[in-house]
Image 1 (spheres, rainbow, N blue to C red):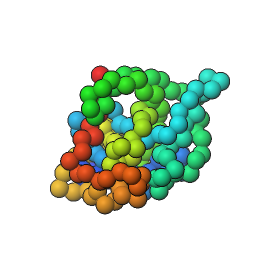
Image 2 (cartoon, rainbow, N blue to C red; image 1 turned 90 degrees about the vertical axis):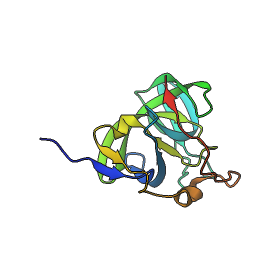
Image 3 (cartoon, rainbow, N blue to C red; image 1 turned 180 degrees about the vertical axis):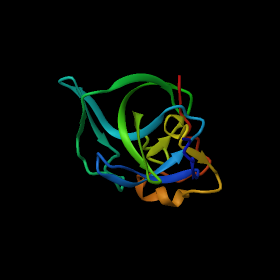
Length: 161
């Protein structure tokens, strides 16, 4: 039985229920292979990865340290084409009522407009992207550090290599 794909726009609000985050603005990027989420801290300690999502200037920042027993690392090309070694963890994300467990790379997205980037690993087989729909840059403004100027032309695509 084939299920119908949900139509989403170029930006959406989503939730990470296991971490207690909701109404998080995300850029939808069909050019990115892997999804990414903003972290301000990530360190390995006693075989676990300890992570703090977002940073103190973001609306969703709570300073909570989230620990992951299962994690990995991979090389990705960032939005400027530079290679970076990043941690990745599996997170449960909810987009338009669909709950999806997927890998997210952990990145300093403080210079990006959106704190989360949703790539093909979340989109494939579940969503159709209509760029005329979805949220706008204004929806992400409260999540951005005050030092960041919103620029709709700023590249934010990331591609796993």
